[in-house]
Image (cartoon, rainbow, N blue to C red; front, side, top):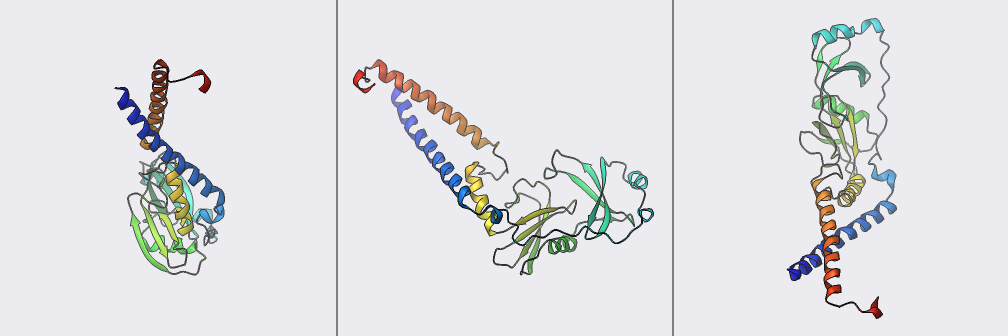
Length: 241
């Protein structure tokens, strides 16, 4: 039995040591990289929220919107490309990047607005000040590698600049999720290693971390058992203590 404990202890030590090395390496990388570049905002600019002069009386009353959409949980005013909208929340999560359900209603006409490919492209272009041109626009409904926390369907708008910039626009709300580029992807790779986020969940509270904690606990206990076993066999001598 003790032989098996020794063998497993040695192999588990190798596994733990490898992950500790990864932590040290990734921590070192975090200290030497340019944190401004790592954010992926090299070609990002603020989108103008200035509206055309619109009298409050020209906006549809909130009461009429709520009457037309009675299942609304929350209503807020927002602006997309200088146009006023009502953002209706149908299903609300704790954070905006969690799974939420929205509807956009034009605050003047009352028309239900879908953030389609064209609108998403226009929003992305308004947030971009780089030299590249748009090469593709794709709707992503699953995991987004550049923004692993984002759980809502989003448009990915790619630009042809040297940093391979991608801009992400949330389909439901028109919210700008963010910019990403090769610098941010480089940093994201080491964040993934550091937090053992191998399933790209966007969180360090994952199965890998929990498993690693239990394995480390087992390593500690098995080492203690091994030490006691050696002590009982008289393998420790006073001159070594």
